Length: 369
Image (cartoon, rainbow, N blue to C red; front, side, top):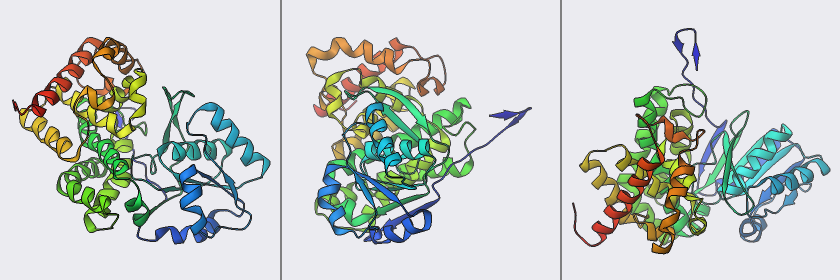
């Protein structure tokens, strides 16, 4: 991060980012630029609904996805790559498929093309991925040597997906500006191992502005399976701006709180971005954010239907006793929550979790503070 007394600023970007209606038609040409023996890793839904409509090279090998980005699944896919002498990897689907494709490509030293079919997270553009246990519990972050060579986003494919995925993506992107700001305030390193550039900070801020301005209209477009400028703006915010923003400016409380919440089994039925949204609200309470800012973020989540209470991420009254476990997991030494200013402890995180839920419930009862 430093060379002598100098700060080193680092940023990371995908090699190419391509977005638009029918953009997926460019996939065969992109494959030919980077390799000649492709393997495509795809979720069952993609195998059924999308791949039959695409003409890929005749020697393309298809590999399904077992549903979890865990070591056993990564090893299985790696064996398929080795057996078929693949020289390029294509990952198509949601966040865990994408993470798996990035990891196996990195381990094999191969280029990777990422084709997200939902805009549910900022995973596609980044040079890092999350590894879970077989039962969905967060284990570690895996850093690749490089970011994906190509990220190819078909807006029409995104528009046809269930709207909950888009909303989860907005929940993930919501954290970008606040975590970037925390790292900037505390002079903490970003996910590239350096300090944030001005470009990355401004992209993180633009991400938040786009969500506030176009989020509701993008939700309406997706509900009606149509592509509008608002939807394209939010797709870009969810995938490109949030991806560059989090990686090149840094993670802080919201994602650590997400990781902590995975200690409660009932939360694992909820999407990454839904838990990150609640983590953002928790982070605002943890950091003593201005009331006006807290109200703005709660209002955004309420308008879109993102979680603002424990009940909305599966934590009912009989599971409250597990909250200290979640707080402790969020505060493990390797977690990014320690990039927040001041001393962070499990007790402080537990109190912030309770405050975030209490505020959400109070607002739902229309007792606006």
